[in-house]
Image 1: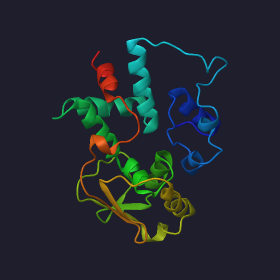
Image 2: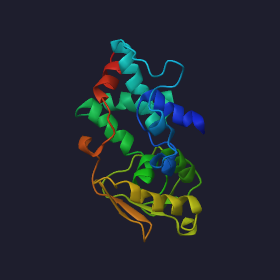
Image 3: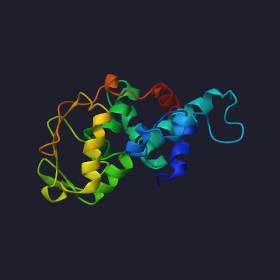
Image 4: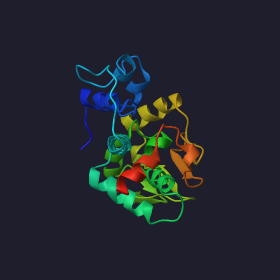
Length: 208
């Protein structure tokens, strides 16, 4: 289960990266990472040297937490990526971005991926006109995502649409907030992912 409250902010500090796990708050002066970007703990501001394995593990944990996945879920996606054509690390990232929960977040209908999962499980969205309740579902080019008509007045969704103005919608998505619809224009590419990730370390971790 994804951490909440102050523990969420601690996760960002531990990974030395703003993971935007608390939605709109991450863009304000209240963001704990902005005020204390060093790792938590008494010796958080000191420099630590890591072994090659530790670096691989930390990168894997960072990305797993970014997407809010359990260990088994993340490993399963990584193993599937290793069996597909293409550069394994890029396939992995594309698979993570193509999850329904990540798409809802990237389209701006949720302030975090965790919130997106909750909204999806409560059946507030449709995919190609059909009710969708699986956060892990992989979208594909041409898919149409829509907020159900009865859900368009929900405060979390309206707040997310307002908050998304603070960030850019990825180029592989097309969103019309007024009609509460979004389309998958193409599969996400490596250059679409702006968060600093060293996917090669993750591939090396699972290749041990």
